[in-house]
Amino acid sequence: MTNKAEVFRSLHVPGKPLVLVNAWDAVSARIAEQAGSRAVATTSAGVAWSLGAPDGDVLGRDDAIALVRRVVAAVGVPVTADIESGYGVTPDEVAATVRMLTATGAAGVNIEDGVRGVEEQCARLSAARAAAGDGLFINARLDAYLRGSGEVAEVVARAEAFLEAGADGIFVPGVSDPAVIGELAAKIPAPLNVMAGPGAPDVRELARVGVARVSLGSAVAQAAYAVVKRAAEEALTAGTYAAVDDALDYGWINGLMTRRSA
Image 1 (cartoon, rainbow, N blue to C red):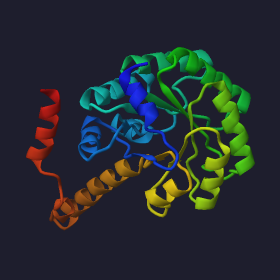
Image 2 (image 1 turned 45 degrees about the horizontal axis):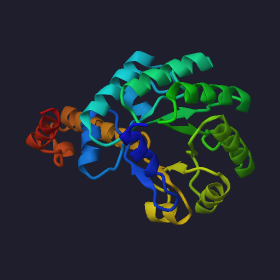
Image 3 (image 1 turned 135 degrees about the vertical axis):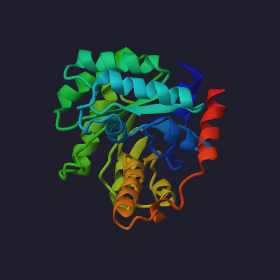
Image 4 (image 1 turned 90 degrees about the horizontal axis):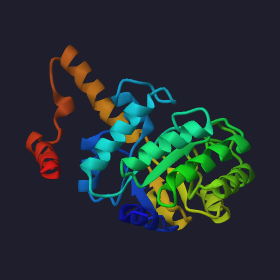
């Protein structure tokens, strides 16, 4: 197990959550690291958008892995990569993706279950585990709440099966009720990851109910693109530039990247 993988695994502590401000390129990853993030996570949506594809297993595997490689090279902290459902249909294809990801030096991976049955997803996770060896932290994402069909008993049962198949942690986006999150954290025998953002409980509350990892997902990329939209509309209509008044300093960004590449 590499040192970064060991470090990343150790950061998953229930009640003391690892907070991940998801990045989509080398600059956003460096900014997160500079702000004090103990690890960097990519967002599959932000990565896909930045590379000209929609989210949802449309981006090509080679492009996705190349982006992860650049992020890993840009930062000194562990990197975990969101690879959607694995950029492959079969377990063997998921395993190939994970082998490529491991070669980048990434310390962790997110793999979505989507609408797949438990048996099918367990086969995919088992293949990922075999391909990764012991080092890579596999975070199994359960999409029941995102689909609007989430029930604690169902999610816990799927989580237990996924852990048996080789996952290390469980990611349940789409749930924001602290009572439900606390019940999931208590019943799932592994670190629980939830997605947060405006309207969700803050990190202190999530820590109180036993969460081990908090992700912002695509929200930061969406906010960045909102600035682009506002700036474009303002410049092209009013002819003014207030939307970029609080832009980061050119020299600061350039220096941030220069120091890392030196």
